[in-house]
Length: 249
Ligand code: BGC
Image (cartoon, rainbow, N blue to C red; front, side):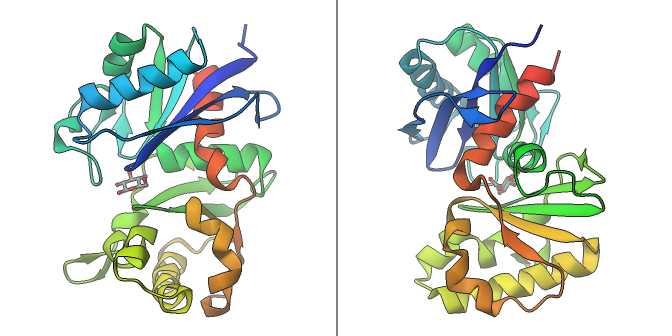
């Protein structure tokens, strides 16, 4: 039996957000709750912050977590924008110890992509659909005829020697270098050109915080493949994590 409402959590470099999700409709049940990412963002500190969210919802039951790293069998294998002690750490075990709840973890962009394919603009889309989340880093989710190729890391492709894409065109770089939307948009377009060349997608969706400013930079996008802001914007990670957990053993 599937649980109807499940707690979805989206772990980001600067904050951790959670909401109860109706897994059939993909809608939030009530408000979203956010806690800042503790500094340092160690497993113990982050797990305690997640426990705060669980307490806020007075929740007991399975939790789905979208996590900003490669996640295999619940284990974080990278930590580009988090404390390095996460590498090799079992996210599911650590959060289970802090909350008492069973936990299922997956990559945050994969979670967002799953939500967008089920409830958003990716619904019923065949061919290759790529979702890029634009935030502190660049996350990617790649689908072929609706099937997810897990743990792709297209935010880490090289723009030139020693320059990975997310250090060139993530939203954190736009803020850090105080780039106008136009200047940043030009960089992001260069990134899209590479993705387009490597993946030959039929649709590219943009998620994460900056996707709501799409109008500010869409004039800089020159590739022929359609590029559109995702429908679920910033909620997709939470929704996808909940749905994925609901459907996992
Ligand atoms: C990580 C990805 C993650 C993305 C978005 C990147 O730095 O390597 O795993 O999906 O940030 O959070």
